[in-house]
Image (spheres, rainbow, N blue to C red):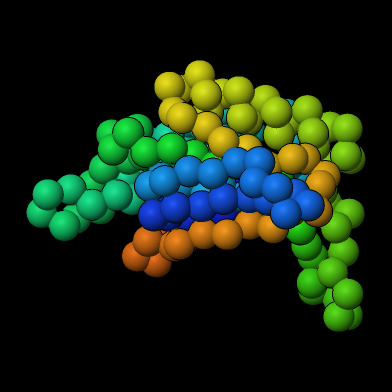
Length: 153
């Protein structure tokens, strides 16, 4: 599973010009289920993201998590994180999970974020979405359960 995490002051997602999810301070998480992923990868990412210390403490050091700050999470499915651009100029998305499995894992991911007690907003799986954000920092972190040399903890 892959996730691109951005620390935000605010973020929103629209479908057909209608806002369907928005948050104030917190994290925008773009997430992609890959072929072969299961709830094990979902658990690894949720555990890591909910505890990732990328918010500043009183001394200005990145020492607090979204859980510590009471921030919210906006989760948006993005199969293009599976892009393979090693050959040619047209990306291949063959490593993305099939849509049915991708949607199941996306909803599982969202439910597990919610179960952490984090306020949650979401996009719409498979929809053409417009995502707006104010990246705070900017702080952008890439997580990939496949390329991580050890279990994400």
